[in-house]
Length: 354
Image (cartoon, rainbow, N blue to C red):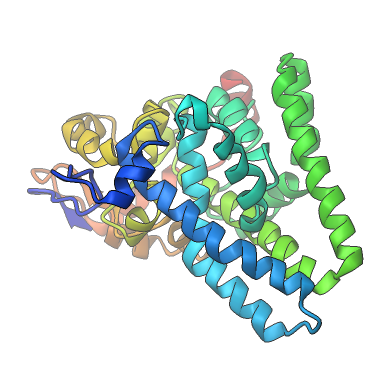
């Protein structure tokens, strides 16, 4: 357990530079917010490395599994997480100025499929559905009906998402007459399957490495991420973001993935800039304490998911942040609190909150 006396945050915040370098000045002309320069640099680096490399894998006269494995290692260790969280951010806050917005389409349609994303689907699911329903029962990725420390329940959750999400999301959008979102999603999904299907016929090993493996792993990681983000839910008030989500501070994940650990703050205000998250948390720390929010230090969502699947509440308790230093909690008290937040909701309660 981390006892909060004078909590110091090490997560990234924006520090203005008195003078931008020439390259940064050039890039800044294209984007709305100077604080998002890291997104543009990541996009340029990803495009420079992943696109030529993936093309080479397809056109090379000889396919080498060692080269394919190296490509996947570079993708997963250097680009996948940061790209997805960049996509997350510019889904909520447009990245480019109006006259350059077509570049954003390239990031979704050109770079996205190399990072395991079918074009348009992420925006439609996350912004058009998840943030509308806020993890309540009408949310197609809702975790309330599952026991969140059960591998079997997670398997059911993941299987439902992986095999039926497009069907359920299509029904959701049509029922609510969100026809533009529906059209965009279907166009993106069909385009991906058509193009990847043809490329698989042309060169199945390259298609497996460049498109199929990233898609499978990305969707798995996104679902265990969402599971961890919404694993600790108060039975009395699951509609309150302070009580239906978590915050992770001072983690390597926040430094590489644009403060994504501040999930409570994100659900309170989806358009909040990622560099403002630490300051907002400190400013509202008393509210987090009053609402009995769950805060961890030094963990990312995948680690939390692993700890839950192993039922290692003692490991979680070691990273739990007690925001009230005047009332220390024992390890057992923390474990009981965490366990109470992972229980599935009853059928009647699900109906009540639907």
